[in-house]
Image (spheres, rainbow, N blue to C red):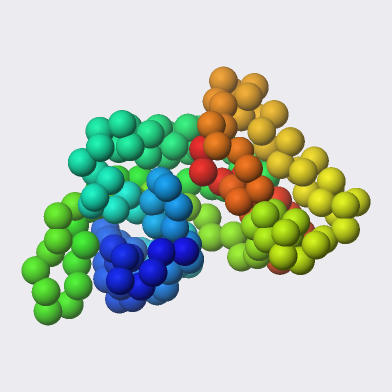
Length: 169
C-alpha cells in the first residue's frame, strides 16, 4: 500500500461520477480506491493510473489494455469491469486537477490469495479449491484469446463467501 503522502486521491475526491471513500491498495500499475458510484448508488473499486505514470506511454497503453481485456470477459471468477476513461479529479473548494485514467470495477470484499497463503496460512485443500476457481476464470480468458500477463496470488481475491475473482489483466 502506498503511503498517505504518495496517494493521488483523498477521501471525498471525485473522478467522473465516482466519489472516493478510502484507499484499498497500490501496485506497479496503479492505485485502487473504494468509491461510491453516485449514478447507480453502489460501492465499487476504482483503479487509477497516477499522474507520474501517465508520462509513460507504454504504461498508459497497458492500463487501457487491462480495461479492454477484462471488460470483454463475463465469468464468475473474473472481476467485472464497469467502465474506464479519464477525467479530472474534483475536490470541493479546489480547482480540478489534470485528468487521470481510471477503471471502475466490481468491489470484491475479502482477502488476496497471497494473504491467505502467507499471512493466514490457509489449509492446502482450501487453497487448491481457490486456485481451481481462478483456473476456470483463466481458461475462459484464454478461450477468448486473452492472456493474463501478471497472474500471481496478489492478483486473486477471495471474497468473504469463498468465491475467487481474478484481477488485473
